[in-house]
Amino acid sequence: MTPRTARPGVRGLRTLLVLLLLFLAVWMPRVQGLDRFVTPDEPTWLYRSANFYRAISRGDFAGTFQREHPGVTVMWAGTLAFLQKLPHYAEEGPLQLGEGELEPWLRDHSTIRPLQLLVAARWWMVLWIALITTAAYFPLRRLFGAPIAALAVLVVAWDPFLIALSRLLHLDGLLASLTLLALLSFLAWLHCGQQLRYFIVSVLATGLALLTKTPAVILIPAAGLLVLVEWVRRVRAGEGKSPGMLLAFLAWMALAVSSVISSLAFTITVPSIGSLMFSRLTRPMMRSRSGSITSPDSMIGRISMPSIVPQSCSEMITS
Image (tube, rainbow, N blue to C red; front, side):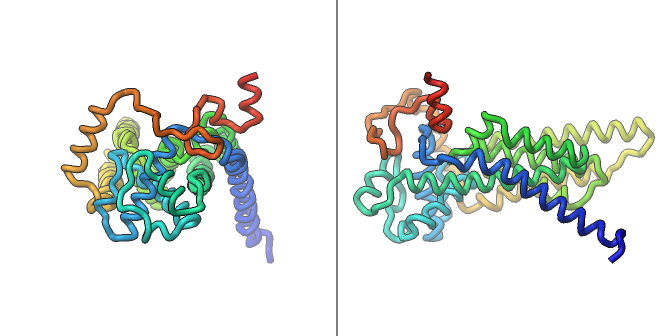
């Protein structure tokens, strides 16, 4: 084998090694001690995941709609946790649970504790976030080169705030990762030869971000602004008006939005949105915690800020 034919294989092995190291850099700080804490919103997403799983198993697509967020990707993580720890819930569980009703049902019908389900769901969230963050290396490498790309991923991997946020069964950590990948892939498509693979990755990441939380809609005007700036630059540089680029952006926007519409077509109805929005607006700012459990194995105890970090760090903060 000549050196020229060997180089692509060597580059491929080097890229695989870099990706593996970056994945471990993202994965390891997040997967440790997932059973040491509970945050206030996670039990809510766990019972919503139970409803989502039950509805999916029955083909009740309208029942999968739990909140206007819509939080679909988070509930898939919860669904995988139920499949892993409590698969028979699809046949035996109630059709729809309310706030605080999952723990009593588990206590009466199963030996599985809520924390076990929560830890399993967090594990899937950490896996997805680690994979998405690692995948951001490719558009970063296209934009800035391999060394800067690897360094940028490490900065994201070891940011304390992002580490804490991405260890939860919650929307924002996954939303941040998907938004990052969507924006970087769009920039790589726009400024580095408009390659189809970056276009597709950006569309998929944008659609998943919108299915995670509605503030991801900011990606659409942000992408439009980036296209406008590039279009003006090309016109001023005498490179032409590039109508193809504008048409490609419209296709990108249509594909991203249609992915959400197609996913939610059977789940969102006007009455359900109206009732949920009304309950959100009329809900008291301070909810009663009378149903909270305070035993060490409970889903919610007294939650303090240090409880979001590992025990050793908590001791340092409170000392």
